[in-house]
Image (tube, rainbow, N blue to C red; front, side):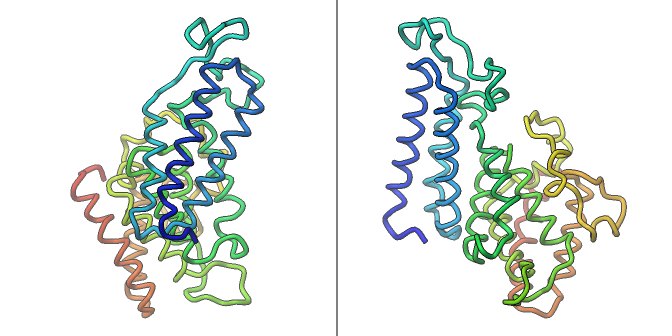
Length: 287
């Protein structure tokens, strides 16, 4: 876990990394390989910090502010190889068809953050060898903070995955050291942190208006994150992919069922989910 007093160091580190990438991008003709490596390193550090800073403390906000500061810069321009400075004619990095950054711009799209977070949830988040219960809750709280400030691309599929695995998938209530599957008492705690920190973000994602949101990520390419789980399929009447009001209603129903499961920890967790979700629905009238 991150030790007390290190949050300011983390914030400074992120700002410094963002400033370094920005300066390299706008002043020096691009080396896309180095740029991609720098971005992956930045998001790796972000993920490691997010999973180890307690979600229950405002220290996680020290990771959000640098991201918003970068995103507010919007798309920057690069010098051409023959330009003497960053103020001449240039082209965006997404003009290079050979780059994996093709569909992104620095910084408006927070390039590669979406793919790196999706990769984290695909390969590590639900594995006991990579995350313990506290780390899983910390990361969920961080995702809630991201969507609360409108950083949706990538986090939208990750948050959807957490709902899917917690409320739409059959799994044991309690921990079993001999089982590979993460239990409900663990995941409902993570879901509570997500709901508590998302403010209106989850309601926005589930609303009809979000369907017009432009994203470089196609949910159909990540069905293991975006498609409905077996329990939602059995319920019927729920769109098979992505957020929807019908899916939201199913989650509320499942949480209400779990609030009577007889396990005090799970019941407390799901009540902590229901309260902010109901409040967001009432306040926004989006659902």
